[in-house]
Length: 254
Image 1: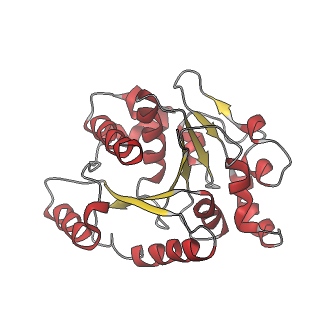
Image 2 (image 1 turned 45 degrees about the vertical axis):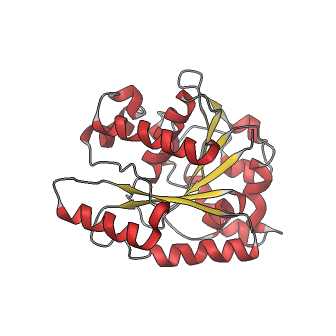
């Protein structure tokens, strides 16, 4: 079975990258996939959102990127949830500077992930298009772009896709834009529908049919260190991520 390494990327913050990484991991695992989250965001939101203490965790992805620790030493095996995480914290912010002087700097993460045995690796990217995100794109087989259903949704999307094209041309010719996920969708708001129509007009079938709604239960789950499946599996948010995982699994393995 092929390994899929999926960069979840948008240079805007607050669009649902971490929520998508955590909850796709949970439901892909329920579908029988062996899943790892790689937290390459110095904010460590995936790490903290799963109830891991970011201040005390060691070693982290930062240590692994610079070969101060092996990935298998840093990976947190979550036997309760059934998926694993390669954690990070604020130390990772220094990596942007340290990578500048590193030979083949764009390939540091790829060297790490190529050695790991998972069906799906979800990379939770930082809200920027710097060296960490370029590392994620160089390591990835696919890119998922969460886009918030708001007025400025398409602003910056062109720049992001230009970076994806540049990485494909220079570093990773097999990089595939797997799709765009509409997040924070409000069916009562005509703006949400307008954004969806605009995305479909520009990107067609690359826009996932499943949309992720605005949902209080979904928003509060990380504060409890839980996935939405654990926090409230009957909520609208849980049902949406379950459906999204099925749709994604179909694209990857169907």
